[in-house]
Amino acid sequence: MNIDPISDFLTRVRNAVKAGHRVVEIPASNLKKEITKILFDQGYILSYKFEDDKGPQGTIKIALKYDKLTKDPVIKKIQRISKPGLRKYTSSSTIPRILNGLGIAIVSTSHGVMTGKQAQEKNVGGEVLCYVY
Image 1 (cartoon, rainbow, N blue to C red):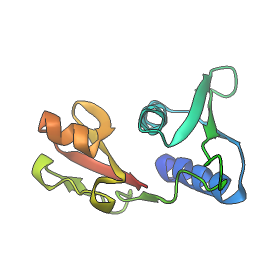
Image 2 (cartoon, one colour):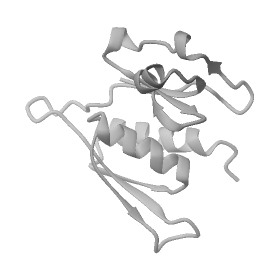
Image 3 (cartoon, helix red, strand yellow):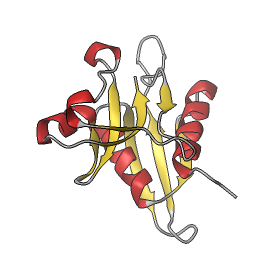
Image 4 (cartoon, rainbow, N blue to C red):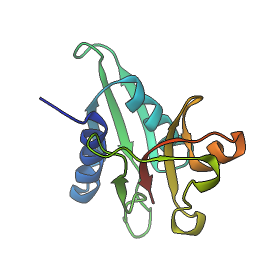
């Protein structure tokens, strides 16, 4: 039984990056799909595909992105912030900047899941899900 599906998602991506895999397959949920879309829009992953044929909610196939010359992964670190035992909420004025703007914070707000910068522009706060850089 999986207690924290978001941690499972982040751990699968982190492990696939460390192992040098090109593709990682993850059980889908609506929140995971939104996080995947953000990672793609911000340029951290190469592509993604939602498959509805496996399992009750389907799966997400993520193609990981690596540097062409050095073969280093684009995702250096992906870290869970708000956990089931200790939720971390923030207002729009106190959303943290990651690596002085080089990374992103993914925030779950009342207007949906978005990056920290988008949340500040819309002036909404919420639960800080993870940091990616």
